[in-house]
Image (cartoon, rainbow, N blue to C red; front, top):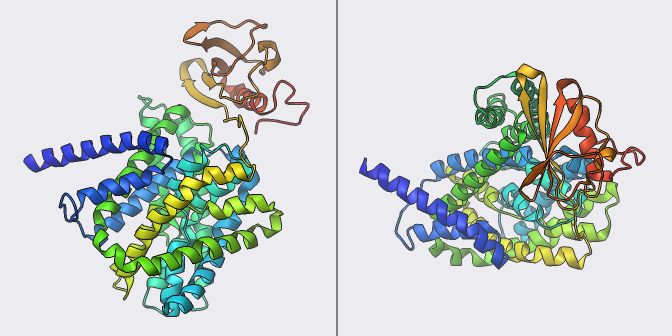
Length: 492
C-alpha cells in the first residue's frame, strides 16, 4: 500500500507541474514538450536517480499514448476546415515521406558511412512529424486554414506509413518486391476500418440513450481505440484506422459533442505529458554528447535538404506558392513519435539502434527549440498570419428524447461572421428557434431586432427533423455572414 501511495503522489505532482509548465512554456515561447522531457530527465538516473531502462515497456506505453493523441487530434479536427487541404495533406503524408526517407538515407549513407539499410532506417524514423507538436503549435498561430489543415492531416496520417517503413527496415528479413503492395494494403485497409467503425460508432451513439452525459465521451474514445485494435489484428494500419475513426466521429452528429471534445482534449494532454515525461525518464543525457556530430549532420540534412525537397515534390500538382512551401518546409515539427519508432529496432536487437535512439532524442530537442520558437516569426515574415482569423463556431447538441427535440448550444467565436447579424437575419428553418441568449453573464430572450455579438452563447431548440438543417444554417452564417446563401455557403 505504501508503494502505491508514493507512486500516486509522485504522479499527481508531476501532472500538476506539467500543467503549470504549459503556461510557463507559452510565456517563454517554447513548446511544452521540452519542459515535459526536462521533467523526465530530472526524475531520471542523472539527477533524482530513478532508473528506468525498459525499452519494451517504453515502446508499449508510447504506442498507447500515440493512439490517444491521434484520437484527440482526429476528434478535434473539423472536416470543413481541412477538406480543401485533403489532397495536399495526403501527398505530404505519403509522397513527402517517401522522398524524405530516400534523400535522408542516401545522404547519411555517404556522409556518415552507414550501410544502406541502416541509413534508410534513420531516414524513416526521422521522417515522421509529430501530431501532438503540430496540433498544439499550429492552432494558435492564426495561419490560413489551408496550411493548418494540410499540416494537421499530414501529422495525423504520416505515422502509419512511417511505422510500416520502420518495421520493414528493422526486420532481419529481406525486403521483397511485394513490400509496396503490403504498404498499400495496410494503409487502404486501415482507412476502411477507420471509416466503418467511425460511422457505426456515430450511429450507435446517436441512438443510445445512455444514463449519464459522461458516458458519451468514454464510448467515443473507446471506438477509436477499438479501431486501432481491429486494424492491428487484421494486419492493417492501426494508427491510420484510429485517426480516421476519430475524424469521422469528431464530425458526426454526436450528442454532447462539446463534452466529448473537452474529454478528448484532456485525455490528449494526459497522453502527451505521460509520454514525454516517460521518454525523458528513459533517456540517458550522459550519452548525448557522444552522438552530437551524427545528430547535427542528420538534422542539417533533414531540415535543409530532405524536408524542403519532399514538400516541393509533394506540392507540385497543387501549385502551392513558394511562401507556403517555405512555411510547410519549416513546419515539420518532431516530437515523441520518432523516439518511440526508434525503439523498434532497439527492441529487435538491430546493431547500432542504441545510437539511433540517442540521435533522435537529441534531434527532437534541438529541432523543437529551433523550429518551434521561430515558426511564429517565419509565418509573420512570410505574410501568412491572418489577423482576426476566425475560429469555427462551437455547436453542442443535447438530445431531449421524450420530446423528440434537441438543444443546440452555440458559442460565437472571435472573428465569426455571426457578429453583427440580427436575429431576424439568422433565418433558421421552421421548427428551430433561438430560445435564449447569454451575454456577459446575463441571459435574456432574444427579439427579432436583437443583434448578435462575439462571445454570445445561444440556446437553440430544434425538432429532430430539422436539427441538421439548423446547424448547417448556423455554420453558414458563421462563415459567410447574413448573405451566406447568396455567396453559395451551405454550412456543410
